Length: 367
Image 1 (tube, rainbow, N blue to C red):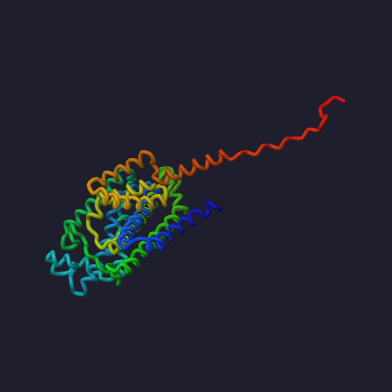
Image 2: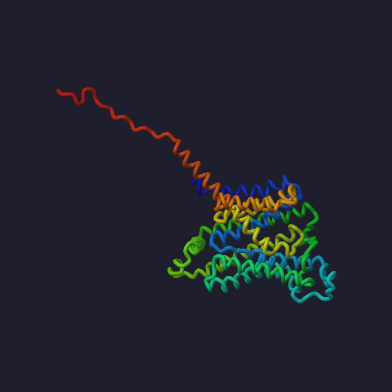
């Protein structure tokens, strides 16, 4: 019974800390930083499903993060500009007419739909093309990384369409909420936290479903699963698309939480950092993946504040140390420590001595 309630209890404690404690004890600046970390934690949930559950090393999550972020950012910039006006960066770039690609994003329903549809469709298309050819392992990782590099080049080269190197900046409103008002910004933080909690709950249920068990079986022995009559390509594509959808949602929430989205947040290096954070926390553990994302980004902020010239080397050293002494991440290290403590406590419990058998006086003596 204790094991049965451990996960719901941990989930409830997490919800209380994020929604009840953090807004009370953190300053508006630190709360905004935590909201940013939670956006990356949503991405980590998707990486946990794809990499931890299915063995797909996704080095291009920045693409899906960016697709969702730009879909949301385009709508917010159009709303701020007003009817008939152009977003500020288009005016600076000399654009005279709103591009046709931007026009549908005035509709909030269309923009919200594209936050999920765009990354899901791109991931599904890529998955069908790649997994049908039985491409896996390092080859899939390289392909996803190449997609991230090409995506950034495309964004930077379209100054009048995407904002170029600067991206979308100075986002001030989010569906009527003033992002410069700390009280209203807390609502955005609450939306991010609730979205993360929903993503965790869905991933937890999925990993324990029949689909989740099949995904793990494909990770551990894809050919054997194929011989049993299942199509691994369909399962892997669906999982990859789900991880992309989560990344797109995270990117959409990142825009109002941070107020800016640029190609520097979406390229190869940010995509690698998303995977490194999950590896540090533990890719086989949902809690480890989420905790790793928060811990890694918190360490990035703290170390950059205290060691401006060498913080990146310290992060690299932390990653190397975890990979050398805890290949399953910090979650695996904690699980091993807990198991060792349980074995030690079981070994120290004194065993009950068997009751002595009473022998009658005179028994065995000759008469």
